Image (cartoon, rainbow, N blue to C red; front, side, top):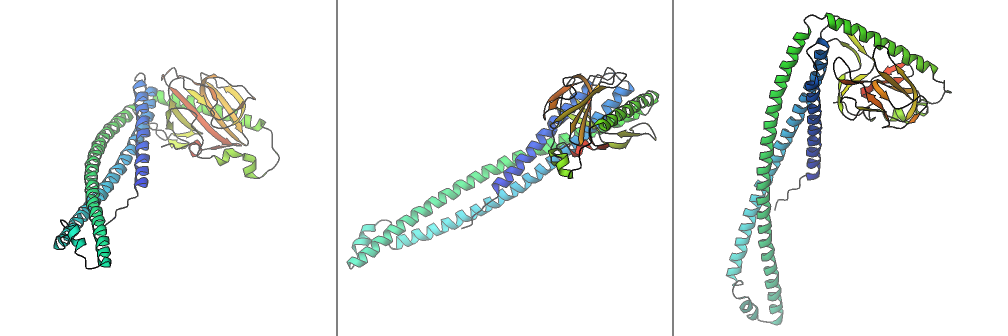
Length: 382
């Protein structure tokens, strides 16, 4: 008889993991959709903000399409395994029924089915009677086991057939969801192309805005570097001991916001509409809910709270050994210089930009006077 043993737990774990990923991405897409709907006015800056969020939404949608594709492949594999199991169980039922039929024919030949006592009493001696009694008992037990085995196998077959129907239904739902996502992705790609085309017309305001932001970034960078220069110089120690556990948690730090999406990445990148202009981002930018709480990502000490001119909001700088994290575009700040903070401590609330009516956090990670890519330090960034 064939026995089917499937890695059910492993399959369930993979299925659950993919479902969790899909739900998390779908939740982020709902958030980016709400940010897009919040975009105020049709001015260039508002449209540029909308462009960045829509760009992130398209990336999320592409990730979602890939996840659903993997789920469909997993469903296909599961259906194939279930079909193999059904074929095997059907063969087992046929074999068991043939064996049972042969056994019943044997029983009739020996007249064991209807005349057990006659078979027992016709023994020629006591030893012969004892052997016949054991034979009858073993035969009856074996026949009962065969009957039970046929019933159990038929029940398993019915259960697998029901599972197959459910799997096919789940696959159909996934295919429908995939088609819907591909359609939405096509529409979003068309929307961002239209938006980009509109942004490329008359870039005067965008250029002025870019120059203002560049001045603010340079001012911000100079302030941070000056604060780092003020930090006391520690005695030379081994690298890992000096940096403490901050370095050990690279890639596992929590986000500085509870919900949001990354709209601008770290490093040099071409401006989406201004030709021959590169944006140099010393951190990453999170679009978040209006006046969202901003939290510190790791234990440390508040090194400085400072404010940029011209409505740039406040910045909080936190020291973690030779590492620093900086949180900018805050409206209200709840901490002061010298405060000891733990991971998750609320530093303040994000400012709402008057022009775009949005909240965006600028987050940086420094080691001494070198800026690091924060995406390498925080948990998965999609």
